[in-house]
Amino acid sequence: MKSRSAEKRQRVVILVGALTLLVGCGAAVGYVQGRLSVPTDLAPPFAVERYDVQVDDFSDRHTVVMEVSLHTSSRVLVQTSGIVTSSSCAPEAAIVSGDSVFAVDGTPLIDLSTPHPLWRPLGADAKGGDVRELQRSFASLGFRGAIDGVVGPQTIAFFNGLRRAIASDAPLVTEIAPSDIVWLPEESVTGASCPVPVGSVVHPGDVVAELPPRLSALGIGTLPVVMPDLPRTVVIDGISAAVDEQGNVDRQSWPEISETPSFEAYVADPKTVVLKGDVQLTTPVRVSRIPPSAIFGTRTGKGCVSDGVQTYEGEILTSELGYTLMSFASGSPSEVLIAPDDQQTCP
Image (cartoon, rainbow, N blue to C red; front, side, top):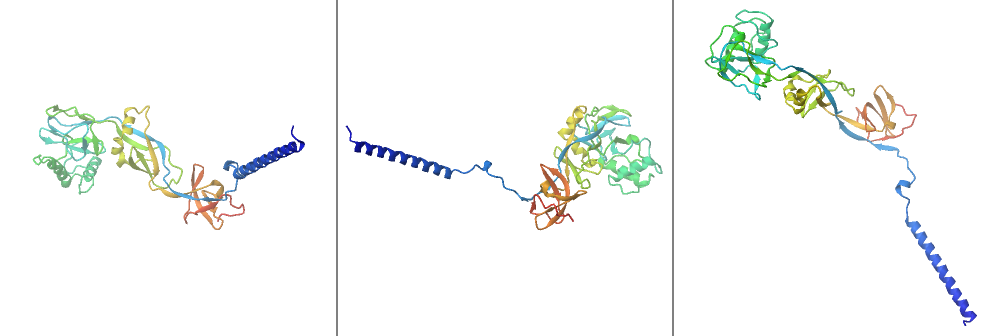
């Protein structure tokens, strides 16, 4: 049997060990708690008082549905009789005013674009609106004579010069007759088909080229409301064209637009296919992205912001992705107060 003193010593050892274990556990827990930090998501929020202003180039680019009007397919006719002795007509080739694609009985026929087809022979001293149209067409080709609606020696000489530029032995004429001209609806057209080969016999009114549908009007349906006075450009399949204040697309760009895949798809099925373009400012403007809460004293498209020291007045243009886009004539602030004092005034 153990003595009482031995049992007492054993109980003391056990008690000391238990206390040591408890102290160690407590220290460990305290150490762990001291090392742990509150997750960022659970940390108390702190107030953000200022915003660093971002300045960008703004083009106001957006996609629009184009408004399109087409001429139906038209025909290129001859007004003479004879045998076609030469032809450069081809579907991919342009027929251009002032050139000659067809020759009949060895005489070149001059391709000519005028508002209306020539309907009568124009000899010396002939007068009228059709003469003036003819002279204007000649002027686009280099004619330096008067555009007075009267056929004079210079008008006849210029026409003979066009013929001789094509064929040096072309006979000189004393009048300009419909039979000497192939009328074109535009200054340059592309033939869709050429049904008359060399060697064919033609008569007045015969079709020598069939043209595809072509543009008669092109514009954007919805005019921009942001900075409406600034010049705009529309981009269709990479082709850029100027847009006027009424939304009309510059006619000079029509030939290139007519060759784009989007336009060809529209022409093939205009009832179900829409022609789209991207409208944008011709020259981007510098804008500052401002939190809406930072703006005060708004009136008639203008407002103010403050950096706490200075007040800046600017033009409110539009909003984008939760920010207000502003333009500052005197330069943009680098930062603004997100919640300016209610007592601040806008000059």
